[in-house]
Amino acid sequence: MAAPAKRTCEDHSNVSSKISTVSRDETKLEDFLSWTSENKLWLSPKVAVSKQGSCAQYGMLTTDNVDSGECLFKVPRKLLLHPKTCAISRLLKKESAALVSESGWVPLLLALMYEYNNPESTWRPYLDLVPDFRELDLPMFWPESERASLLGSANGILKCVERDIKSLTSEFTTIVLPFVQKHTDVFGPACENVELYKKMVAFVMAYSFTEPVADDEDKEDAPSKSAPMMVPMADILNHVAHNNAELRFEKDFLKMVSTSKIAKGAEVFNTYGMLSNKDELHMYGFSERYPNNDKDTVDIPASVLKTTAENLEANQTDKTLLEEKWEFLMEQEVVGEDDAFVLSNESVETCDELETTLKVLEMTRGEFEEHQEKDGWSEDEGDEEEDGDEKWMFVPNGIPKLKETWKKLLKGCAEKCLALYDTSLEEDEECLASGLDKLSQRQKYVLYTDHGQKLILQKLLDSCS
Image (cartoon, rainbow, N blue to C red; front, side, top):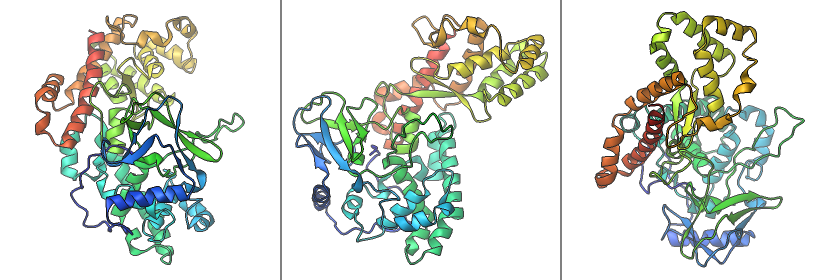
């Protein structure tokens, strides 16, 4: 489970009420724990589910000291909620060809819509306990004007959200709605509401798990992971970058195992992966204040690098050459229209793509034409690999092994990206030091995200100066 703010979103007039068989939180938790016990979900006596002491909503806390490597709970596979275990599994299998989508989530979403609106669902105690969809405070559900004003365009979240809304709306209109209307004996009128569908998408985005698929060298198109599924108890855990537990997939059970010692009374945290603050806010509705998220990153759009290169004096005399180079890089799939170069707090993460791009951009026409003839391969590439990725690491004295022409270009990129934000790094740090109490939770999370990105861009700027 993510750690969104415990607030109600502003407009829910078009979203159906949650069908629940219980009303009080205490009873919901008791029913859920009884249900898990009846279904052979083993819970260690060293942990307990509680809202008190949790960073957000329900969480898991230790009742005794826990050593690294201890199993905290085991979830039998029959308790997982996915298209093959839900009550309409036969229908979903029978019409699977009609449910194919780009996201691959439609079968699970339909399963959830059915079980969520079914008072007699096998997963009723689970669906009664997990937070009401109205509590999901992802940017997708912020009022459009607030979303635009808070997120801006610099951190990249607004573009991701707009893409999500466009994609899920199309998916609902072309796949889900026709299926629901075809099977009105299974789905009620509430399932014909796109706003409810958006909530379901957010629920899967923030709470589901995907099981890694073993590598199959004989199948080039073999998927790297399976479709998402809901894992009762596992989604109770909140996320931080420095997690102290992880979910492991076994033949008959899914196990949550501690990855470090956890003191009595501390919260147990899972990890959702290598997530930047941008990812956390976009998909889960929260972010972490610097320096808590050491997985944070920032993007330098490829378009910014191109624009910066266009403004360099060396490219003013032959702009046609620069366009030819960029077109060639796109043909070679080194860069794409919406691609970006990714920087972390320690280094340039996409250093291979960036290095290739910089090499091509600095070529003379003769060098570039020769490079084209070799289809992008250069005989001297092996001679420059001694330093490997190390030359892209941020160190106290900058990135010393990069060419000065490259540093000049990267410095310009950092300056352009920093200029896109509405506030400066200095203004952010002043607000963090003395103005946080004046901000809403949403404003704080955006501040944490922007501040983390600016710190990385400033590190690049300093390294290239």
